[in-house]
Length: 339
Image 1 (cartoon, rainbow, N blue to C red):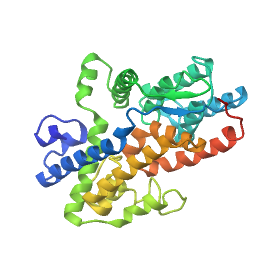
Image 2 (image 1 turned 90 degrees about the vertical axis):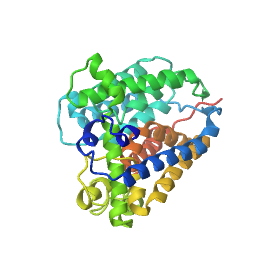
Image 3 (image 1 turned 60 degrees about the vertical axis):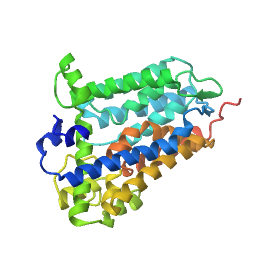
Image 4 (image 1 turned 30 degrees about the horizontal axis):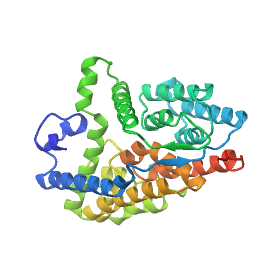
């Protein structure tokens, strides 16, 4: 954002539209991004020294194999760019939820199931589809040592190593997705010029520009409130999805966008802060809960950090439903490990 304001080189759509946003829009965006990060730190920082403890769920070999098969089949069907088969069907929601079910099941360190799980995640990420897998693979490494009672304190070493792996994988995945060859030069350039960052920032700035030119529009809240339910009016591809709304009512955009862009359209700057606060409070509440179903939903929310922040709350609705479904079918009726 600072580079864009100061006319430094920026990637992607931002470089194509350098003169489209006024200084008012740019500085509003910078202030709101700063305040939203302050809110996240204020709410979540007290958790920094707390230990996350949960009881892994005991899973039979048959159940574990079923979940792995579901994961693999959904990966093949949902990511044609990775596996080369285009079925015209998107099962990424089930792919996400089966990932979560596998994460919270009891398994020995470095067993065959963990290895297969990690291989599937690597293939999907290195094929250029990172948003649904990249945090999960780091989480899988952190959670690999599961005893009867698992505690995850997220040590600094985990954060440094996991964060570095996460960043390198995201860079390589982005290069592959854009059709570029992997080299030292392209990797080093991608450290600075992240295409996805440019895309979501552009959409956020579009939402600010819309607010200043046309005011607020509460219609996008329909997706936030009712996008969970099937129907012709709401959902990911509806005209009330904030990215599509901006395309039709303001400026073209590449899709995606910081999740609080929806709040900006609906309520103006205060909407950005409201959305950030809601997100932070939900993460904190799930982290502190000891209820089994909420443990699954916390791990889901953790693994979907990129999906939610890049695309919006509505993209989390279906994974939440399917995670609850997997919980009821595969986990809830299986005796959990006792201390």
